[in-house]
Length: 183
Image (cartoon, rainbow, N blue to C red; front, side):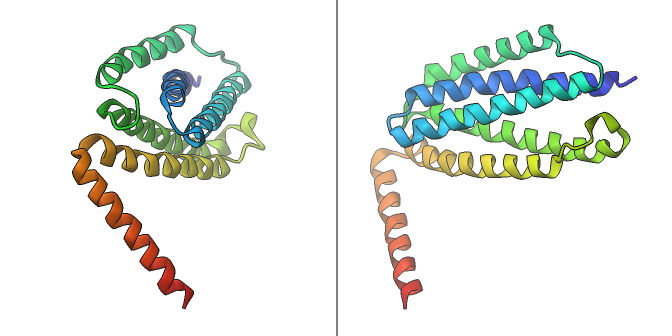
């Protein structure tokens, strides 16, 4: 009966497998221990979301699709080849593009929770799941990744001299803003 819903949930489950793989690569290439910790924590959160997706499927009497999960893993690995070629270390274009992919993926997860929240009143098997809280978690994750994506854009897209000037300008604006707020 819920075949399309099953497919949709499996598609997101497959996408999350690729996201976990990408997040692991970002954590492994992070030079700053705080960034590595951020990505490891994000990886755990996405893993928890994966488990919830499997639970939602099970509550509907379905199981996750091994085929779609394998396809998601394969797609994730194929897209990572390009990113690895461009480099995943800080300051490299591939890191910026990886962060962009991750930000878009998390936005997709947010939209998943929104639509499932709309469907939930018709699916008593999902009673007790607060999709609005899941959406808020996704927004927080996306915003945290987005801040790092913008920094990676400065590092990866600008000439290093131009990027250093921009960083100095931003630091000056933050310092000036902090002083005016103290008075």
